Figure: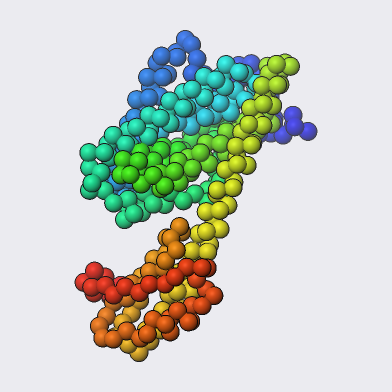
Length: 335
């Protein structure tokens, strides 16, 4: 059954020539090891620079460009391929290259940001903040992308879809983001951004190794030692994915609570201000903060805040509410 599924996915039975083609594509081996490494790190440094400046400039186009030229998926797929065929040397080499790439991308983000760190406010940049709070949906997307990447690399007739796969998965941008946030001393946000990368990394690794296995690559080089190495690699990847699910589930739950809290506070605050000279400008609820800040714009006397607190009783999830009157010139009240 698995053999027929593998043939259907790959198009033709996997042979030694096809294994060699895929090894040459995703592994860093002699005789072209030095050239491959130079090409890999040159592209990685360039893509990290583009990602860093794209994130700092809040430019979606620049971030997408960095994703397209980023080569980091290759050593991850190489590790997945090594796991699937049980090749210990391929696993070790691919892991070392990917770890070097991870460190390099973070360093580039840090070094490019550090000179201007005092002028960078990450909380006001959307492209930075959306990469600091990964959720379970990010893991689901990464699992599917790992399948897509392994499928595209193992079939020559669909290899032109790889740029789309690169855009679908976020590898270099969250690493550059981590460097930016470290340079600006936002360590908690940096951890969240790095968690997003780890989510993508281990999900691609797990599903990539699984699909390479289903497509029949292990049978070409099967032996007892390779089976043990393959089983150990897949087990480690699976355990790491399961461990990542815990913080992702927590942040997903907190985000749902946060969104529900914002809706409740906004509705009750609007009702509370009805008939006054004030309107609600914004409701700010940081996931890890214990205070909800309601920013209002207008003039005149505010209603007693006790009325708002009473209407929100039981809806604040243990938090307190604070009302701040802000200058109307700060907000565009016309939309």
